Length: 317
Image (tube, rainbow, N blue to C red; front, side, top):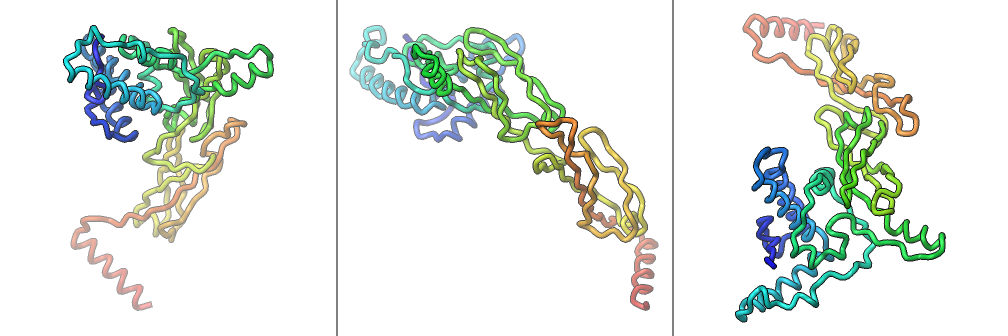
C-alpha cells in the first residue's frame, strides 16, 4: 500500500496552521478542478489527491492520527523495512465516537461533494471508520425514541455555504452530492443573512444537515439587517443647482432627485429598496444612499476663471 504524503500534496510543512491548509487547498482545488480542466484525467486525479489531503489535514483528529502514523512509518522505512511487510493492524480504522460536527466553506462543499469520490486505500485503511472522509456521523444505537432523538441531535452536521448578496436577495439553490452518491437540491430562501441556517432534515446519514449561510461582501452595497447602504457620486454642478442622479439597487438603477445646495454626506432614504425579510419576503428594508460630491477635474483656463469670479462674488457679499 502506498504511503500518502498529504503535506507534500498541499505544498505544506508539518507546522502548517489551519489557515495555511485551507488557503493551499482552495488554491489547488481551483487549479485542478475538472470544470477548469475538461478532458484532462490527470487533473481530475490530482484534484482527488488534493481533496483527500485536505480531508485529513483540516480535521484535527485525523491529522493527529496521520502525524503519529507518519512518524512510525518513517522509522520503519529508515530501518530498511519494505512497505509490503509493514504491520497495518494497529492502524486500521475503528469506528469513531465523534459527533460529526464540522464546518466547511461553500467552495469546499461543492468540491468535496461534487461526485469526485475515490479515496485511496491508504485513506480508507486509516480513516474509513471516520465516515469515509465525508459526513463524520454515527448511527443511533438507542432503542428508545427519546434516546434516538438525543442521538440525532448530536449527529447534526453543519456546512458553511457562501452566497452572493444577489443570491441572498432573490433566493438560490445548491446541488449537493452526499455520501453514497445521493444528490439533493437545497433551496436557500430570499432574505438570508450571514449566520442564517437552512435545515435539510434527515439528509446526513439520517441526521439533519444544516447549511450555515455566509453572505459575501458586495462591491456596491453594505448590509445591516434588511437595510442596504451605498454611496452615490454627485457632480459639483448637480449638488449646487439640483438635478437627478442614478442610484443602483439590486433590481436595477433608479433616479434620485438631488435638491440644490446638497452637501457631501447627505443621506437619502429610498423606501423598500433594501433586502427582503427572511420571514416575510414580501416586506423589504430600505436603501440608504449617501452623497459623495465629486469636484470637476481638468478645468480649462476659461472654466477656472469662472470659478474665480464666483469666488470673488461670494467674498464681496
